[in-house]
Image (cartoon, rainbow, N blue to C red):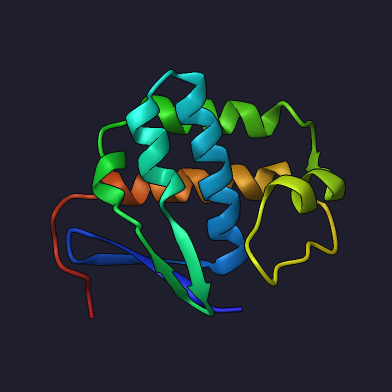
Amino acid sequence: MGHHLFIHHQKSLPIRDPDVALVKHFLIKGAKRINDESLRKAIAKWEYQGTGVWIGVDVTVLVDRDGVFAAAIDIAESFGETIPLNYLNEHVGFAGLLWLKEQSTSHVTALIRSLEEHLRAPNTPNEP
C-alpha cells in the first residue's frame, strides 16, 4: 500500500491508503451528523485510483471545520475499543482493499486528529 500526501501550507502529511479510507469514511459520517451536505459531498469525491494515488482530495474544505472532526471522532468512538471487521469490509474501503483485522478506535481517532492538526498548522515551510 502507498501513502497519500495531504498538502497544506507547503507541508505534507503522509497517510497510508487504507487509513485515508478510514478518515474519509468517518469524516463523511461526521459531515452528515452536523448536517453539512456540501462538506459531505466534497469529502465523498475523494477517489482511490491506485497505490498512493487519490484524486478529488481538496483539504481546503476542511480548514476551520472543527465540528466535522469532533463528530467523526465521536462516531468512531461509539464503536468502543475497535471498529469491527465486518463493518470495515462492508462500509470502509476501495476496490482491492480487504480488511483482515478490526481496527483500534484509538488508531482511527489519532488519524482524524492528525489531519485536523495538520490543517491547523501555521503557514511555514517544511524544515529540511
